[in-house]
Image: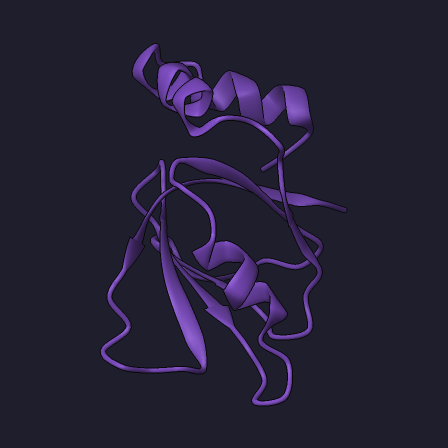
Length: 104
């Protein structure tokens, strides 16, 4: 089952190289983990301009406002302009977009 997040920004990681912190449109903090020999997920995410839609095959809920994507998860970014995603957020259609994409 795919998991979907609308990522609205990046959070500081205080010099950590083993993870990346993302903030979603619901204001939840999501930690994307990486292994020392596999940093593809982090590098691809750092190239994105927020907001963007992120798909993952695994997304763990740590608390109501904390999520985590494991280092071995497969991720992809929906090919859509950040301006288009921003317009959906501003018009209150974020949840509708997630439902249409089959997300959670």
